[in-house]
Length: 301
Image (cartoon, rainbow, N blue to C red; front, side, top):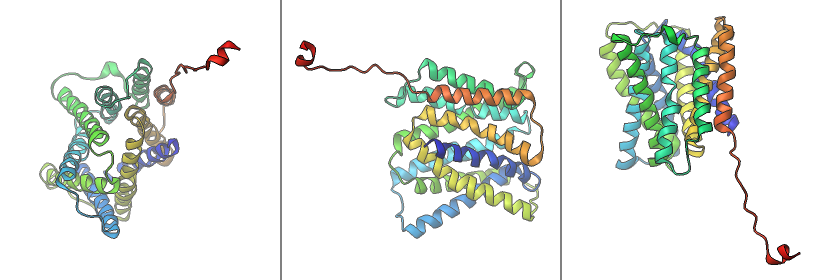
């Protein structure tokens, strides 16, 4: 499972390069909409090939809710927020999702206690992410439009956490390909409608690089990666699986450094160390006291 988590983080992290390239050719929200609709089409073709029956009303209801929370709402906010606040701040606030999910899991998922060690690991990981994104907390603004947008980004991370909690509590045994296809389809259509109004008049430039970025983000980083994420989430503790996603911006920063040549300051390397340390804290095995039972004859001897 650790290798699957790393593969997922690598796919989503390396997708940062595709996303950076895509902003030269697409309006950001429209790119996300087309990306998820493309990913949904790929998955629906798989469902058609498998002759998967149409889901019942109960599943369809939760598929639509998750599509709104973690695709439409989250990406509409995250893609729009960078027009008003620093992109690094938006990333850090968006990736507070493991913190919210761990708190909710403590109350709603039996056996997933939020221990002091887990809490420490979460905080270390988020502090590390602040260093990776090269953010000076003392220079952050907390008033006016900036504060409003920052709160919206935090709300989007909370929406992402709620969607993941729904998966753990309501959709644990559903077909992950089916769930991903429908929630991505619902979310992609909502994003498309939002983009038509929010980004009206902004052109799309169709080039070979634009198509490559779209295919990479739509097929690999959406279809495959989200099925993989939901599979991991259904089998691993919410806090442990979600905190591992802090590796995504780390790998993203490293990918941009390697592919695009953007330099990483010493603080970013220190932040990477903190993120890895935080993930290690959350995933460490807690010591348990084993109670040994002895037969009367063993004690007597």
